[in-house]
Length: 399
Ligand SMILES: [Zn+2]
Image 1 (cartoon, rainbow, N blue to C red):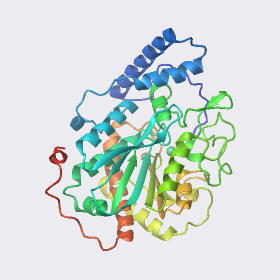
Image 2: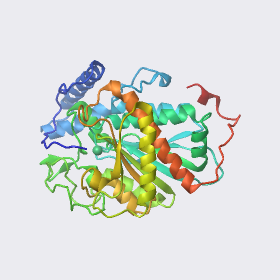
Image 3: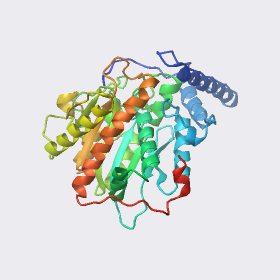
Image 4: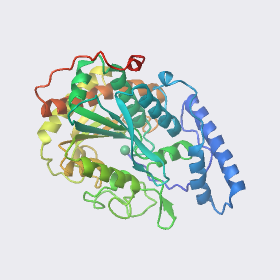
């Protein structure tokens, strides 16, 4: 959400302390140590001829090193922020623990060749179902958003057998969750710069790095609130969908757009539930219905911890922005599209303390579930809750 201009020269350096908890700091130091170790190993194996090369190669080695959490999947701590390797491991564990409900898929690969893994939550069915998509972490520094996507998946998988609302939802739709959209940027925000926003691909022959992936979509691309200068935090790329991460989403949505009924993209911060459009004040085709759903979601959210979220069109409620994923997906014909800006309103901003993960996620789950249920009710108005199947995998009741 709010942005402060700064220029970064990517280097493999120790992270700077930015009011992080001791747990996060310890893991940052561990990752930095491993990064430096990887860098040293690398430099003995190849001729390091520059900081930028060291950076990219060091990051690749760092990311392939195994420093997975020693915790069992059932003990995964959802009240802490996790580095990318732990999130990958968590996705593997969730898929393994809930084999009848969750499968893992790959949207594509990032510039640094990391998989963009997402989870498909789907009850077995003989008929094709519609899709609700949700992504988190398109902006690297918004750490609360991957934490939220993981929390949301946990809520669904743990409660799907006895919560009639979840049963009704999954009877009609499959829910796809991409916990970290901008994987390279997220890794970079852990290893090098906590406030990094963009992706990490070099631009203009390596003079600067990264594209704002939420300005890179082909929808009024490059016309408002974007920067042609690649040192800017809002650099929109060299052309629409110039970045591999954007192309991956474009290919997926184009191939599935007749099945996708709702697109959700989660950001921070600002406490907002937004509907299209961001690129202009143009009225979206089903604005009233989407506004009604957003208001209902904000009310459900407030009931959890009393937190107020503002609701409205992106353009007039936040700021004008072109090339956003929300607008592009919506203009592909997907009926419902929402951007949610999680806590807070600026006190901690992108560095929301870990003790706020739980309340932030609890209230946001209430909002997102309200949106998903409302969308499903509108598409499938006469659905009755399913009865719990006695044949469900025993493993699913463990957690
Ligand atoms: Zn954002």
